[in-house]
Length: 378
Image (cartoon, rainbow, N blue to C red; front, side):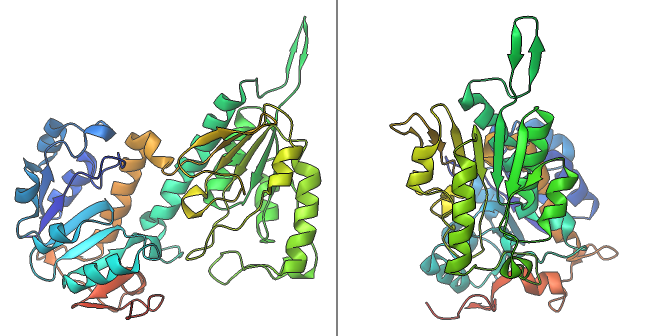
């Protein structure tokens, strides 16, 4: 019998790694699920709902003791992992580039550590892609929060008393978060433009009814990796793009920045001078704040107002502010991932270590760091 442990997260992380829905499905696979009491409270998943789905609700130490699998949202404490069965499976958003010493400590525990951020971007892995599921919600919430901070109507309104003009929203970075931000801003009635250095995004932007803004030269046409991420651009291209953006951004009401390159600090897209050119009341929501921010003036975890009246928000866990949805989707991502490790007939774990999804996300096994993107040395 496979035992799965689900624990509560730190005080600044409201999400949880299993929902009553996924507990029920794990039970159907033959697993026993032990959930720490209160783990789902901040996602509105009551202990009784977990019990009704087939889970055992226990203390943290009881949930962890000898478990075969630990599911978590953030990187779990090493002491939690040491309480598991030797060689247990741990799946979470590990933040693999964030703290090398912590990664080495996780590896030393002897557990098989899976970093869900490394999930390959393939068709088969779509249901397991935690970055996409969480970024989708963050893109939506960024526009909702930006609209609230803006304090004016977004859609054009024609009334007997006069016309209210449509607000202008500019989305910088057209990944999953950016696409959802475009769609949400359009649904709310804003006049939307967007920019990205990847040529494939132009058609996506236009398909959502927004206008694409970019310097479309030869370098731009080659600016995408085989895995779909943006390549670092030359200083010359960055200068041309910055000039175009500077002329555009001064006219905008709401700017959402979403640009991130895995393992690198967030690229700076909005300079201090650009912010100073914007009108009073304009809003910037910087979704890259956790990696230093796309805006030069972003203060991670804070919302500030500049001398010229521009509000800049640097949220650190925007998906977590709608934890009910975020936890539900994240839990399904983990369910889909763990499902490929199960022998359905024997109802035991049977991990195929050669599976591309297993190899792609496995960062540590048998006491050593094994992922090719991470050196085995500190």
